[in-house]
Image (cartoon, rainbow, N blue to C red):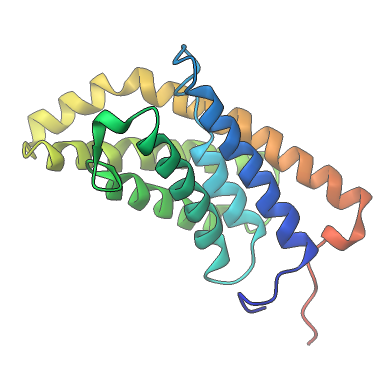
Length: 192
Protein backbone atom coordinates (compact mmCIF):
# COMPACT_ATOMS: atom_id res chain seq x y z
CA UNK A 1 0.00 0.00 0.00
CA UNK A 2 1.50 3.34 -1.02
CA UNK A 3 1.65 6.47 1.07
CA UNK A 4 -0.96 8.04 -1.20
CA UNK A 5 -3.49 5.35 -0.21
CA UNK A 6 -4.96 6.52 3.06
CA UNK A 7 -7.47 4.04 4.43
CA UNK A 8 -9.99 4.50 7.24
CA UNK A 9 -7.70 2.23 9.30
CA UNK A 10 -4.79 4.62 8.82
CA UNK A 11 -7.01 7.60 9.64
CA UNK A 12 -8.04 6.00 12.95
CA UNK A 13 -4.43 5.06 13.77
CA UNK A 14 -3.29 8.61 13.07
CA UNK A 15 -6.19 10.06 15.08
CA UNK A 16 -5.18 7.98 18.12
CA UNK A 17 -1.58 9.22 17.82
CA UNK A 18 -2.71 12.86 17.44
CA UNK A 19 -4.98 12.61 20.49
CA UNK A 20 -2.15 11.15 22.57
CA UNK A 21 0.27 13.84 21.31
CA UNK A 22 -2.30 16.45 22.36
CA UNK A 23 -2.34 14.95 25.84
CA UNK A 24 1.44 15.33 25.82
CA UNK A 25 1.05 19.04 25.09
CA UNK A 26 -1.55 19.47 27.80
CA UNK A 27 0.71 17.81 30.38
CA UNK A 28 3.16 20.71 30.05
CA UNK A 29 0.63 23.37 31.01
CA UNK A 30 1.00 23.03 34.77
CA UNK A 31 4.56 21.57 34.68
CA UNK A 32 3.63 19.16 37.49
CA UNK A 33 5.16 15.78 38.32
CA UNK A 34 3.43 14.05 35.40
CA UNK A 35 4.89 16.43 32.82
CA UNK A 36 7.55 13.95 31.81
CA UNK A 37 5.21 10.97 32.06
CA UNK A 38 5.53 10.95 28.30
CA UNK A 39 3.69 9.07 25.54
CA UNK A 40 6.60 9.35 23.08
CA UNK A 41 7.68 5.72 23.34
CA UNK A 42 4.09 4.53 23.04
CA UNK A 43 3.57 6.65 19.92
CA UNK A 44 6.64 5.09 18.26
CA UNK A 45 5.63 1.54 19.21
CA UNK A 46 2.00 2.01 18.21
CA UNK A 47 2.95 3.36 14.78
CA UNK A 48 5.44 0.54 14.31
CA UNK A 49 2.90 -2.13 15.21
CA UNK A 50 -0.01 -0.99 13.09
CA UNK A 51 1.09 1.12 10.13
CA UNK A 52 2.11 -0.95 7.13
CA UNK A 53 4.96 -0.28 4.74
CA UNK A 54 8.37 1.22 5.27
CA UNK A 55 7.45 4.92 5.46
CA UNK A 56 4.19 5.31 7.41
CA UNK A 57 5.36 3.64 10.64
CA UNK A 58 8.07 6.30 10.91
CA UNK A 59 6.53 9.27 9.12
CA UNK A 60 3.21 9.63 10.93
CA UNK A 61 4.46 9.32 14.53
CA UNK A 62 7.57 11.44 13.75
CA UNK A 63 5.45 14.12 12.08
CA UNK A 64 3.12 14.19 15.09
CA UNK A 65 6.13 14.46 17.42
CA UNK A 66 7.58 17.27 15.28
CA UNK A 67 4.35 19.27 15.26
CA UNK A 68 3.93 18.93 19.04
CA UNK A 69 7.61 19.88 19.53
CA UNK A 70 7.11 22.95 17.33
CA UNK A 71 4.13 24.03 19.40
CA UNK A 72 6.11 23.60 22.64
CA UNK A 73 9.17 25.27 21.13
CA UNK A 74 7.28 28.42 20.20
CA UNK A 75 5.15 28.61 23.34
CA UNK A 76 6.16 27.14 26.69
CA UNK A 77 9.81 26.50 25.84
CA UNK A 78 10.58 29.50 23.63
CA UNK A 79 13.52 30.49 25.84
CA UNK A 80 15.22 27.14 25.12
CA UNK A 81 14.61 27.17 21.36
CA UNK A 82 17.58 26.90 19.04
CA UNK A 83 16.31 27.42 15.51
CA UNK A 84 12.97 25.64 15.17
CA UNK A 85 13.38 23.28 18.11
CA UNK A 86 15.64 22.72 21.09
CA UNK A 87 19.35 21.99 21.17
CA UNK A 88 20.11 18.37 20.32
CA UNK A 89 16.58 17.59 19.11
CA UNK A 90 17.96 15.25 16.45
CA UNK A 91 19.10 12.82 19.19
CA UNK A 92 15.53 12.56 20.45
CA UNK A 93 14.33 11.94 16.91
CA UNK A 94 17.06 9.34 16.34
CA UNK A 95 15.95 7.58 19.53
CA UNK A 96 12.34 7.81 18.35
CA UNK A 97 13.23 6.26 14.97
CA UNK A 98 15.20 3.48 16.71
CA UNK A 99 12.24 2.82 19.02
CA UNK A 100 10.12 2.43 15.89
CA UNK A 101 12.64 -0.04 14.43
CA UNK A 102 12.53 -2.02 17.68
CA UNK A 103 8.74 -1.90 17.60
CA UNK A 104 8.65 -3.19 14.01
CA UNK A 105 10.87 -6.11 15.02
CA UNK A 106 9.20 -6.97 18.33
CA UNK A 107 5.56 -6.21 17.53
CA UNK A 108 5.11 -8.23 14.36
CA UNK A 109 2.37 -9.88 16.39
CA UNK A 110 0.71 -7.71 19.03
CA UNK A 111 0.55 -9.50 22.38
CA UNK A 112 0.78 -8.23 25.95
CA UNK A 113 4.18 -9.91 26.41
CA UNK A 114 5.54 -8.31 23.24
CA UNK A 115 4.18 -4.88 24.21
CA UNK A 116 5.93 -5.17 27.59
CA UNK A 117 9.20 -6.20 25.89
CA UNK A 118 8.86 -3.36 23.37
CA UNK A 119 8.14 -0.87 26.17
CA UNK A 120 11.29 -1.86 28.06
CA UNK A 121 13.34 -1.82 24.84
CA UNK A 122 12.02 1.61 23.84
CA UNK A 123 12.91 3.01 27.27
CA UNK A 124 16.43 1.60 27.08
CA UNK A 125 16.89 3.05 23.59
CA UNK A 126 15.65 6.46 24.74
CA UNK A 127 17.88 6.38 27.81
CA UNK A 128 21.06 5.36 25.99
CA UNK A 129 20.65 7.48 22.85
CA UNK A 130 19.35 10.71 24.36
CA UNK A 131 22.08 10.72 26.99
CA UNK A 132 24.74 10.30 24.31
CA UNK A 133 23.08 13.24 22.58
CA UNK A 134 23.21 15.32 25.75
CA UNK A 135 26.93 14.59 26.08
CA UNK A 136 27.56 15.56 22.45
CA UNK A 137 25.51 18.76 22.76
CA UNK A 138 27.49 19.72 25.88
CA UNK A 139 30.73 18.76 24.08
CA UNK A 140 31.61 16.35 26.92
CA UNK A 141 31.47 12.92 25.31
CA UNK A 142 33.58 10.95 27.74
CA UNK A 143 32.73 7.63 29.33
CA UNK A 144 32.68 8.99 32.93
CA UNK A 145 30.45 11.92 31.93
CA UNK A 146 28.14 9.64 29.93
CA UNK A 147 27.84 7.18 32.83
CA UNK A 148 27.08 10.08 35.17
CA UNK A 149 24.37 11.29 32.76
CA UNK A 150 22.88 7.79 32.67
CA UNK A 151 22.68 7.67 36.47
CA UNK A 152 21.18 11.15 36.83
CA UNK A 153 18.61 10.35 34.11
CA UNK A 154 17.19 7.33 35.98
CA UNK A 155 14.25 9.23 37.58
CA UNK A 156 13.30 10.72 34.20
CA UNK A 157 13.62 7.35 32.45
CA UNK A 158 11.43 5.70 35.08
CA UNK A 159 8.73 8.26 34.23
CA UNK A 160 9.41 7.59 30.53
CA UNK A 161 8.96 3.85 31.18
CA UNK A 162 5.76 4.48 33.11
CA UNK A 163 4.41 6.80 30.42
CA UNK A 164 5.30 4.38 27.65
CA UNK A 165 3.64 1.51 29.53
CA UNK A 166 0.50 3.49 30.40
CA UNK A 167 -0.01 5.09 26.99
CA UNK A 168 0.81 1.82 25.21
CA UNK A 169 -1.89 0.10 27.25
CA UNK A 170 -4.35 2.84 26.32
CA UNK A 171 -3.44 3.06 22.62
CA UNK A 172 -3.07 -0.65 21.94
CA UNK A 173 -6.09 -1.48 24.09
CA UNK A 174 -8.36 1.01 22.33
CA UNK A 175 -7.28 -0.08 18.87
CA UNK A 176 -7.45 -3.81 19.58
CA UNK A 177 -10.99 -3.40 20.95
CA UNK A 178 -11.96 -1.20 18.01
CA UNK A 179 -10.64 -3.80 15.53
CA UNK A 180 -12.87 -6.44 17.13
CA UNK A 181 -15.93 -4.23 16.80
CA UNK A 182 -15.24 -2.61 13.40
CA UNK A 183 -13.95 -4.95 10.70
CA UNK A 184 -12.79 -2.07 8.46
CA UNK A 185 -10.00 -1.46 11.01
CA UNK A 186 -8.50 -4.91 10.48
CA UNK A 187 -5.43 -5.02 8.21
CA UNK A 188 -6.05 -5.91 4.58
CA UNK A 189 -4.66 -9.35 3.77
CA UNK A 190 -2.38 -9.49 0.75
CA UNK A 191 -3.54 -11.80 -2.06
CA UNK A 192 -1.11 -14.63 -2.84
